[in-house]
Structure formats: C-alpha cells, structure tokens
Image (cartoon, rainbow, N blue to C red):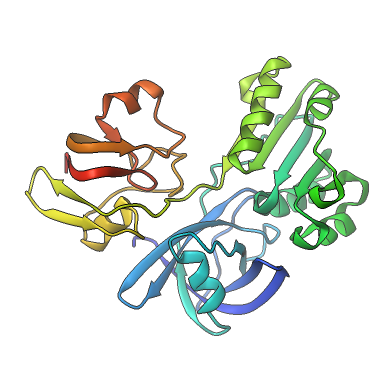
Length: 317
C-alpha cells in the first residue's frame, strides 16, 4: 500500500465496555501532522488475510509521536474490530496510511455545533481539542446508550466543561435536535457523526430550518457488511475473482493485486467508484456517494461497501 507507515502499539486502554483506544507510535521518525476530523486506514494481517479499516484519530493534533484510534467491537461485522480487540497486543506492529480528512472544521464559522451519537464521538475528540486550543466557540452534544457506554464522555466534560452536553438513553434523555438547530446564531456550522438515523434526522431538521447546505457537515461510520459470496470478472483481462462472505469487493480486488484508488473505505468519498460492464444479479448499493439515478443505472459501484446479490458482475477493469 503506497505511503504505508509502520507503527507499534504503545498502549491499549478500555474506554468503554465495547470500545478500546489504541496508541500507535512510529517505528522511526515523526508521524505526519493531521487536523481534527482526520482518519487513517489501519492494515491488519490476520493470517493470510489483510484487513483494512478506517478510524478517526482521537488524540489532539500537533503531536508527531503518536496517533490514537478508538475502536468499537462489532460482533457481527467482518472481523476487523474483533481482530483489534481480541488479537492485537502492546508491541505489535501494524501499518497505517497518512492521515486524510473528509470531515474538517470550517474555519469560516463564527461558532461550531457538534452532535455525536455513540462511536460517532471519535472525530469530535480531536476536533474539540483543536477548537479549544484556538479559542473557537463551540458546543458538543453527545448521545449515548448509558453513561457507562459513553466513551470519552467524562474526559470531554472535564476538558471543556459547560461546552459539553451528555444525553444517556438509559436515563430517558434524548438529543433536543430541533431546539439545538433553531437556537443557533447566524454563521454557526453544524457537524454530525453517528448512526445513519441520527445523521438523517439532523440533516433533515437543519434543511427544514433553512440552514445552508454548506453549513451542515456529516460523517458516516459505515463499512462493508458481510453478505453472500459472488464473483467479479475483469473485462480487460478476463480474470475472475471470488469475493468471500466476510470481505468487500474492494478487499478482494486488493488481495489479487488490482490497483483501486480509495480513501474513506466507507462509501462516502467516491474515490473508488468503478464502472460496471455487466451484472448477473442485483447490485446492493450501500454507499452515500452515488445518486439515485446512478444506482438505478447499474453501471457504477463503490466496491468499498457495495456488493452483488446473485452470481456476480463484470467490472470495466
């Protein structure tokens, strides 16, 4: 993988029952700088299988000696989070990509309204640190299932005081989304990260309230889901590649040495969009990049998250 940076696991901390924080330290030299909201793609070698997952950086920007990621264990996922939780130990070596930021702070804003749900808190840990360091006005609203499940909640409240507002579902507390959006000063920018339902509700509420689209920023923590196996044929070479139940089309192509540009690996950036020459089945689109018309055409796919229900497809590769 081009630009891969080897890192050593310096420490592992249990932040919540299902969330672990991993400190990644460089083997040599300094790590590239990053800004709040950035992520890295972590490569894990699980036997013969290479796994690549994107995770937000949660340490404050400006420290060249470490990256920190927080990973929620997903029991019914494809195995990346389980590998990190159950197999990785202090001292192990992994590789990461240089940081990329698809969810940056907009410094034209007069004020920043941050809304997080569950593990969607992770990009905001670094973002709030950057905002506080620069003296920018912000408020963070963080919804969690319970106080015990709220990774980073206590720390964020200790660091930022009244700027942080916590909502525990176990206590019957809910994010007052409509009020929060209605009460903001002109020039405020809104950022939301978390489950798709939360993101959709926040964006719809902001749109109905007349917020400019350019003032509303979202990041979805999506990844490929397991599914039935299928086959991809490469039109230019005739090669056939089998996609297993627990791997994405993108991972299968990478496994076979097919160069595919990618960045977010979560169906958001569109970097890996690939032309489909034919499909013997139905493309199960799981991305947030292609338009409804593009998806209906059956001629494009984001292999990072989408797959086929049926025998397979032919890619223009």
